[in-house]
Image (cartoon, rainbow, N blue to C red; front, side):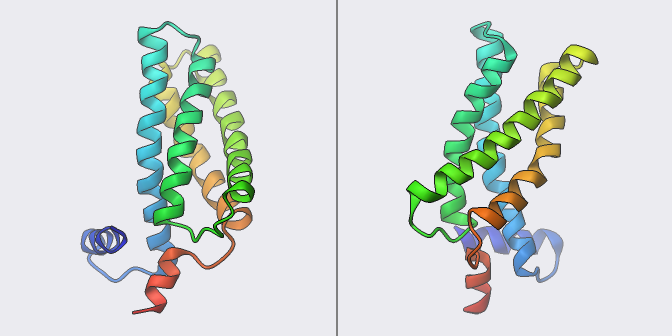
Length: 153
């Protein structure tokens, strides 16, 4: 799966890609899957169950972060194998991202009258970089899966 993603990225870009960029593209794919899950919960809870959007966003976050951690340890970062240590830090950084998301949603929805799903997409883009760099530095500081694969070539 990792080789498939790396080959796809290089085919799309039409050139060999460095380790860090491959890692970031894998992170985007994992994050994309987690985000679709998060947004599905948000949409379902707000539109079908009529749950307040801030509560629905927090529920979507819980689903998304669980999927995100699982995929990231498989495809992006080298896990230490100590889930009890890694996941709380991963989640804490995610909670920081959630707080940013909630503030952005509140401003865009309540103050600027954006549609919730558009506001969520804006928040996703803004919070993406916070999550990646904080997790790379504090949760998975060891050599990434992308770096290991490139070194073995």
